[in-house]
Amino acid sequence: MYTTPPSLLERVRKPCEGQAWERFVSLYTPYLFSLVRRAGVGREDASDVVQDVFLLLTKKMPDFEYDAQLSFRAWLRTVVRNRLHEIGRRRAVPKAFTANDFDLEDSAEADSIEETEYRSHVIARALEIMQRDFAPTTWKACWEHVVSGRTALEVAAQLGISEGAVYVAKCRVLRRLREELNGLL
Image (cartoon, rainbow, N blue to C red; front, side, top):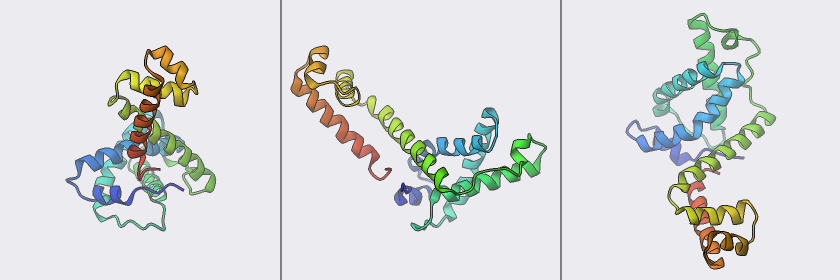
């Protein structure tokens, strides 16, 4: 089961930790967006609600006490659920905000889906960030060999590099990916 890195949670408790907040927002925006959308909120309104939840989190996180025995994402589900109910009480809104069938309850199935979505997001985001740090040939050599499953010899011939250079590219990119994902997965 995935756990949020306690070091990240500790860092976002401090208002001056801008870099930690950027990482936190990058990691949790898709998760919060999926919760809000699953509650029936339209795409346009969902973005506003997610932003509203992050604003609320900037106020809540300094007092947040992390407990490794509990799920941080379950706590976030509760924050989202409460925020949506509060928004629904404050103003006349679409049925989705005030519906009784508001389904963000904890369940093994929901956790499994969330885990898969979260892992996919984190890996895709890490790859997106990393790609900018590598020469196009290095990136393509690794991608074609690892993801596309082509032999190093085929990739080398296509890119006009040595077979050894394909293996070096693979090692460099995968080592960097492990570093990026350390503590996140």
